[in-house]
Length: 73
Image (cartoon, rainbow, N blue to C red):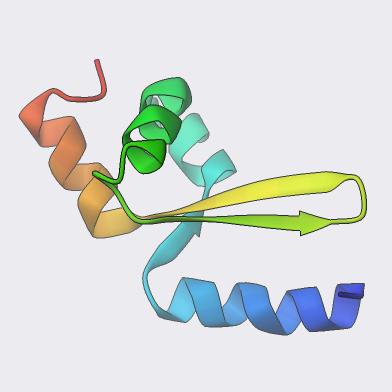
């Protein structure tokens, strides 16, 4: 996947409610817990690997709900 394809794919993810990890990190979410929940199948997440770069995208509504439930503390 080249950078142009990645940009189109990223826009599709954002339009479907997936938000990049850096947004959650900047807003005080526990990224390690989010990744654990995603790997356990409790939260929808996408892992995008382009070259040497790995980026995670999480469903915003599920992340907010997990935070309200106290699962991210």
